[in-house]
Image (cartoon, rainbow, N blue to C red; front, side, top):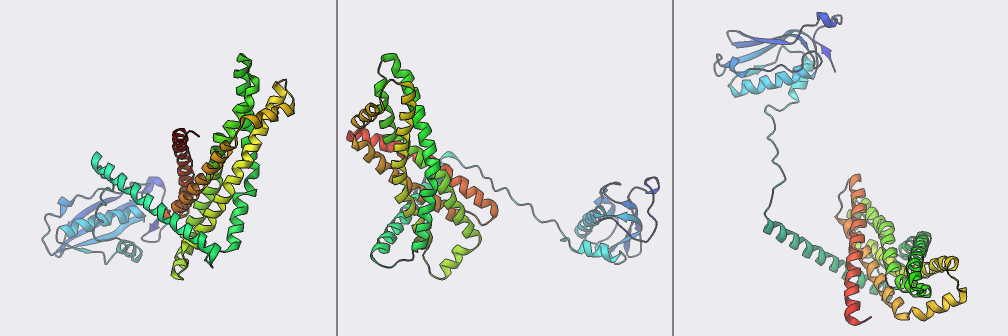
Length: 388
């Protein structure tokens, strides 16, 4: 905002003098005389030399005279604030009594001295400190997740045996969103993966006249690894991110605080339906995805192999043992539990702003995908050790 100290016609650019200042000695101390147009486009904020106050004695006053100022804006206020700081440091009384009311009010909003600089929050720590802090953080999160899992297990048992805080309506709603609503995306992805496996397998096995073994390749790969991993990744991005976003939104809206005030446990009212629903539906989605993936391989094989449909399915049933499905079923259950627990934990740790909701959803998806791959590697080592 640009304002004039006295009513006058707006001068042209050629008639507007640059801002200028000078100090005139008086009996009380000194008078700071301001002239010209004090606007940012005209001249910005002139520099005030504090050495000009050395002739004034401690206890005297420095009066500001702005009668010669035309238009002004924040440039004038910024300059006067700098002069006030210099006068205070020199032990002078800064007198703005003859300034217009608008100028005095704006100047009064500023502190007498600039606020101290905020120290940088970034402190470079040595390797041992960072390693120790990371280890402590990992142990803390492991303990929190273990406690959440224990509370959820107790809540599930209590929901079956006695009355709990979990509402059946919430459980059914979460089951619907985690199960039937995900059938399309799970089916499409697993169908395409089965088709890709069959195509690549046929191209390579044809060199050795062993195309019939593509049934074992597609069946074992889907039942043992591909369907379990891809279904878990889909659910981590679809359901895990939704869990984290929902809980962080409730945290921002203070709904979590309200539940705690009323003594309603978060683990039973919010976390338990989410964890149970995903743990129930993920193994079923795995079985569904495995069958769809094998069917995708069947479709490709029928278009590239000289074999009957009956012969293909007989070879598949003979080559894929039941233990492969059991192994994938167990893995999918652990994947589901990890995704749900990690997403809920990320949601509870999120901030309370709108931006934190997106951050929590992204973090839950990333943690879920990385955790699934890491858990699958552990399962592979265990399966090799047990001879499965």
